[in-house]
Length: 72
Image 1 (tube, one colour):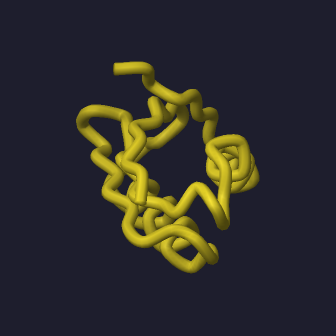
Image 2: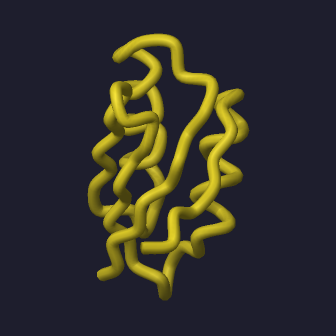
């Protein structure tokens, strides 16, 4: 399992964060998503054999938010 943070723009409230978490956690290969509205980011734990970073970003963008991977 891999943990990766993504910077998200376009969230307006905590419901937006919950929306992102729900959508990601319903995706095969994603174990857990923790989106923080105040920090405007999400931390996703996922299996790189089943899902790639690009797909996670694509899912977030389909929800009409922008996302980029954070390099730590």
